[in-house]
Length: 217
Image 1: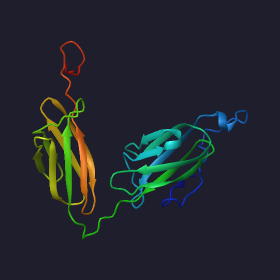
Image 2: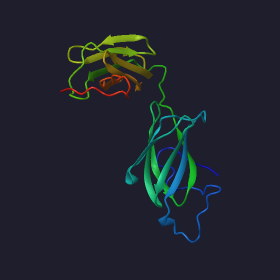
Image 3: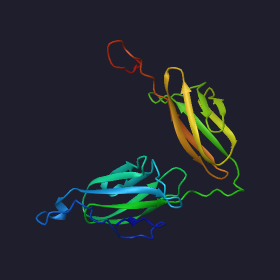
Image 4: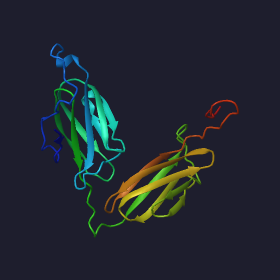
């Protein structure tokens, strides 16, 4: 049996059901057992798996991602009631309390952020820098893949894409001698989205050994 998340705060005290084939020994107290919880994140409308959703349980110091099938695991949990938040690019954040009694499984349903037909274009503004020093990287190539637009960073490392349609976009940043970075961003209705991109030094392969990074100085 599977329990489903409902919209924010409408599913208080969600009890996780016992997983088949994993009963607790009557000789072992529940609070001495490291409980494993199996979850799955799905789209509320299509029921399709949602990948790369971020599941956080701050009280337990847990921070995990859903895989390509939407699944994730929370391990070594003690019994109790905890606050959980779930975020994913392009989806509305969900949060609420759930009760852990023993090993179990449940589903989390996420709703897409709706962009109406009258949604206005937004702007993506960013800066590219070296993570070792924080110095700007001028003349780095910034490619907004899905739109087919390119920019070169300024002397101070800044770039801008104006008048971009709202939605999910793929941003790729590259520079000779540094590792190319690619990330997916969500631009809302008439939003100014600010991003920071760090380009680490690209490791240089050494003959007869593993690749080693170059260190300044």
